[in-house]
Length: 571
Image (cartoon, rainbow, N blue to C red):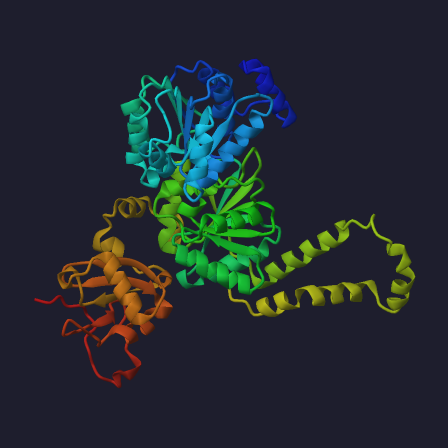
């Protein structure tokens, strides 16, 4: 097995590595470091997060830097301030025994005046987010003319966040560079384009298959009705009492709402989203890293670059629209060789996404039943008992109180003591879950087979009437006599019907917006409420007609009035 000593690193660096307890490089480190130590070879490294990429480029950089030259020689560009700070902290640890080598993190949300002052004092390595770096370039507060090495870390993340123009700008301002080192978890066409446009015959190293997932992650999914997502989330948290995890939502509104609901119920959770100031973000992340918080709930943008050791679970409250985002979400767990679990809460109409993901990351996803109320209570009870048995009683003068305790419990059996402990600790769980519903959505044989042709049609958006008209378990279709001719596009139509019905988007499925009318999938249990709220209202001096296309729902106030529910297009 290869050792760090065999890679050709300086003794000062090897000393720092040894003090950290590392003896053998990870696969990406073993393959990247010998190539990067030359300093003149363009490089593309494809590996999942948590595989040691920071050391893979950080150690060679420290080895190449000329300490006597007090100007930026290396530039590391990354997508978020969290990742920027993490890389900087890792470099500080690695360079502990190298005197005169200085790094500076430049990112938004912190004092730019302080960053400019530190840069002027002389630094050899700059770690930056794109926006703040460009700000410094335009202010002429940083000179990149002598930068030899440019590192693009989490390149796919930066492109997903819309930083393509920023990356082009940065690379055009480092004209005297000797090499570009690009690290990415996936290799979408945009990343390949950077390699083609700016790199010369790059050495490419792939650890695992391209776009593949971490083999130490157990991918699980649970199938439920859309309006049960929150209850399923709560039940899964209760079923895993030792969980230390991140919950991902699509929007910051969802993150905030779920955080508030769980907090009111006593869960140690906070939300991380774009509305927080840098000080608030740092406070939340500090509490999460110290494990004062059991759970962090975040949007994809807010969570990018988060690197926290020991995360046991990642939960997708909803699957992401961009399948490659799943790789980054799941990569928050199972880091540094540890195992982890990535859970997705799905509706039956999302099963084709699960099959897509299986193919994309070359992993098997395990369909798991949502635990019953009794199973949750049993898991909580035995978790508590394990903690009770493992409690450290070696410290403290417990013997002083034992005679009184023995006298107090002399007529109480062991069984009764356990029952009373259970009553004190778990009465709220027992009460909450004693009549808990079965939240599993049962799939029919066709859904379980998950016909490949249905998958391809859904994936390509070419399902047509046959694909859209099928009535999924739990969903029904509504016909509305509004369409693009009325000035709607999909987002504005969605907002209109949600505002008019005062309902949440979680109850809705696919929306098929046409010129003269629209078909809307909705949770069957909520169809009547939406029809009652919208049917008969006026829009642009015209009466809105909404009805259930699949079964003839009748409004409660129809009083026997006959009406055809077959949809008719206006002429």
